[in-house]
Length: 292
Ligand SMILES: [Zn+2]
Image 1 (cartoon, rainbow, N blue to C red):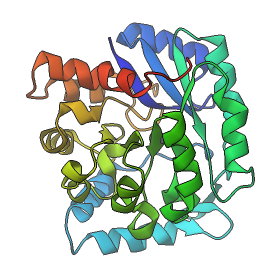
Image 2: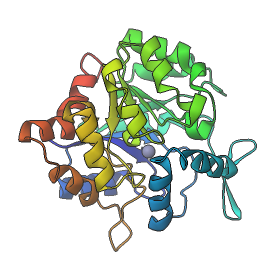
Image 3: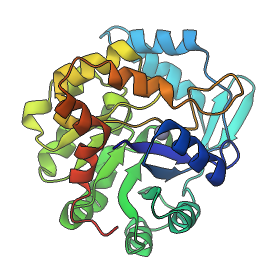
């Protein structure tokens, strides 16, 4: 079974029916959807992504990548790319994902997007959606919502208590303090998006001290070499297949290409049992006991 645990509900790029059609064609049984947080962005050129991957994997390069990132964050929650500004939604619309999950309960589950900086009270927002069948975990984005991960303590404490998995796109420095989070919430089912972006190897090296820390393999932030390195360091039992669809990889007609990241996973030098864990079993274990 193939389960894509990191995808975005972005009907402006890929409608729900079109998505189901593509999943059928690609043999993907289920997708876990995240509410969209900003208007569709222009595609990042592969050269820029390659440079970013180089910088993030070097001690001298990471501060440069952080400066570049800070330069894209405008005041009042906007992302600046070139001359254009894109509004970042402080509270992404969980209702849109709940609707998709209810319309296709056999194909979609949903992540509940929370933001400790509001405007919704995050624990109330969690209560509002966690009873909806199929809303199976919590998504957090300190990198673009721009807060220190210490602000997450009440949310993470509650998720640990509820055994809800948490998918977090970590930021730099105190906006991505995975060491502190893993120590404070040792039982929390924590998944760092994009193989632990922007930390990569340093986060993987923390594996032994963080028994519940997982990574997903989604997005063109990564390439095949990074995915291989992540799986070698973390072990297939801590890695999860995800795509970041509909962002990133596209077919010539512009629609999402499910084959790209799948190919990385299919070519991984792991046992078939390990591959099955990556493709779905690890995530199914993480949502064990969650209402769905
Ligand atoms: Zn994503």
